[in-house]
Amino acid sequence: MTGRKLAGMTMTDVSAAPRARWLAVSSVAVGTFTIVTSEMLPVGLLTSIAATLGVSDGTAGLMMSAPGLVAAVSAPVLAITARRLDRRITLLGLMALLAVANLAGAFAPNYPVMLAARVLTGVSIGGFWAFAAGLGLRLVPEGSVGRATSIILAGVSVASVLGVPVATFISSFAGWRTAFIAMGVLALVLLALLAATLPPLPGEPRAHASEPLPREAPARASEGRFTWLSGPLKVVLVLTVLIVAGHFAAYTYVRPFLEQVSHAGPALVSTALLLYGAAGVAGNFAAGARVARNPKPVLVTLAVLMALSMAALPLIGLPLIVLMVWGLGYGGVGVTLQLWIMRSGGGEMGTALFVGAFNVSIALGSFAGGRIVDSVSISAVMWVGAALAVISAAVAGSTCRTGSSPRPES
Image 1 (tube, rainbow, N blue to C red):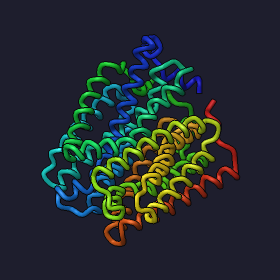
Image 2 (image 1 turned 180 degrees about the vertical axis):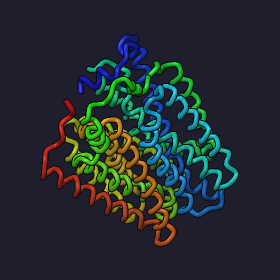
Image 3 (image 1 turned 60 degrees about the vertical axis):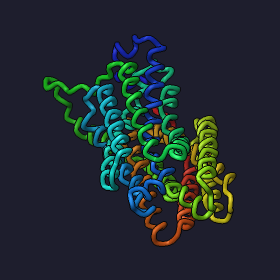
Image 4 (image 1 turned 180 degrees about the horizontal axis):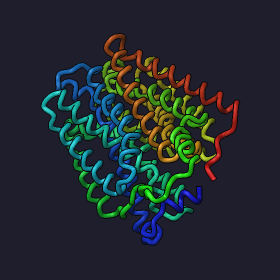
């Protein structure tokens, strides 16, 4: 690990002022918060957007499915095709694309235009998240890489639980288009901040033609490309699909559930989602404090909390406390899976595959939930989400019994 870390750092990287480097880390963290909040935006606005653009709630759920699928593809594709580009230029381009996508969504005259804007959002999400996750290695000294990476990835976890309540709060006063405009403006502000704080971050150098590879190099290169197929990485990717798909099958439709089943008005919906978000932030930091030793039992606990809360929702008339339990559980999922994937030794491509799995799970979950909402009932998606959370807990629990946690690379 040490050799790779030193190799990834340039003289510019190690000589910059510490304060400037931490400012860059903070800027990237706000960037990850912005892209994931943009991805989650339709959840709290779904019924309003559906009514304005003249589509059903289930069809409106494609606003979550489309960027999720696109991000799942763009993460590994950009990790390969843009690996030699300066990371600073790449991140600036992706943030500019996000600003365009959010503003296009804000002024979308019809649903096809909105979906096209969400596709652009997906490209930005996949690429930015995949490249940003490993930037701690390039921005701070070796001894601070873990802390910097945690800060950058915390933007993803916090956005997953706070983005929807904040967007819902804005829309309750000024409408859903204003929420999209706000995210577009935030992306433009971040574009300027990243341009001011990020140093040059050269991509991978090209191999010199005068330096032939040894005969065994092709086999090693092939082996390196497929290290993600190792047991620990496969387990994390499977768990990502199960728990994230189950969450978004239900959570994408939480607002129509609150309105139709709990008969909650706009003020109560906003309050419920804000409480969910606050509990999620608490869950993020509570899990982060415990996951370093062994992520497996932490994930089991989180999945059980999610399963219990989703199963309880159809049975309780005013589910504020239940939503907080759900937020507490899901709030810790992101940081737990992220640390587990890093401990499994996947490298940059492993991170890209994790981002891909996470986003395709969002797409699959929200799409399946939409079909269930339209063909069965709004309450049925809660039971589906609970079932997938139970399966996730069972899979993670079986790994606890069959082996120890993977150790970090050395």
